[in-house]
Image (cartoon, rainbow, N blue to C red; front, side, top):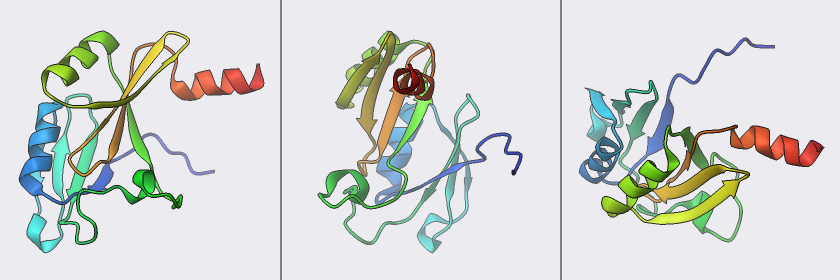
Length: 143
């Protein structure tokens, strides 16, 4: 077994640098390094929670589309990024007030979750306080 302590970063391929940076800044991420986006190096953004994303690009095939979630064939790959939020209701109000469409919602026995999309239709799941979705699913499956 490998002793993993945490994620280091998440890489997200994007089409439009300015549009994606603005979107992630709105969510609270701050640019901490620009390695040369046009040369294929990442834009490194850090959230006060410690979540680090690397925006890579520019995308050259089907910009603005999500092949993993929006195509009929189901391709392998990471389909979404789920992040815990401290207040589900405040998060939903913030998202709505800033014109971000909610593309799905669930309530797992009191753990409210909403789904949004970034400018390239990458899915972000915003999970409210309470047990993790993984714990709730495992509990449901195993009784």
